[in-house]
Image 1 (cartoon, rainbow, N blue to C red):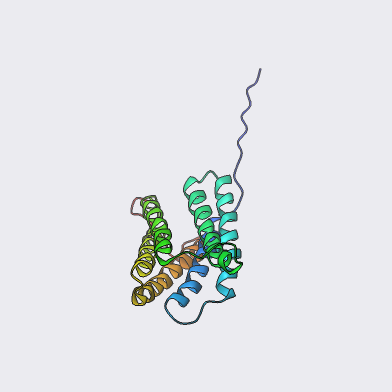
Image 2 (tube, rainbow, N blue to C red):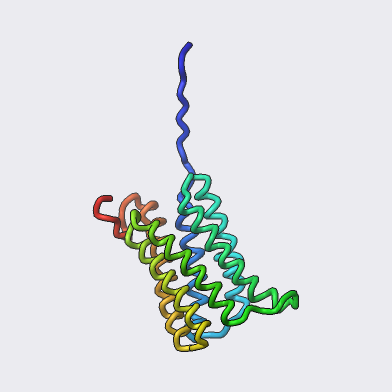
Length: 196
């Protein structure tokens, strides 16, 4: 009897840029509001629901298909963050439940900061660009939580500026992966670890 081996090659695309861009663009737009550049409108809610939320969850499912536990956990979790944030805003407006207090929002954001901080350690074997995204995101969550806990609008404004930097770093990281793949060479560096 002849033994046959079948090798299956993964020909699916890299879902990480989709997840990073969905996160990044939505984060920048929300944090322009937090920094005080404009008010809060349906533009932020729509971005949070459809792109920050749904698109990141789709990217997470695609990462699962590739066997990438980190990408699955990150994108489905952060996609769910955006969906829950939209829910926290819309549910009270629909009259279903009372909105969260500042202390409750601070607790919510603190838990996301803790989650992100632990996920940051998962980037230590990745490139510097991704490390920066997760480190700056953890800082953003903690700053926003502090702003809610203290009621200090200046802290929230500082968080807004920091969030803009965080969001643009995710946009850069996502676009770099797309452009580098299209040109089959490093056009936009991701600053890999020295042993990569």
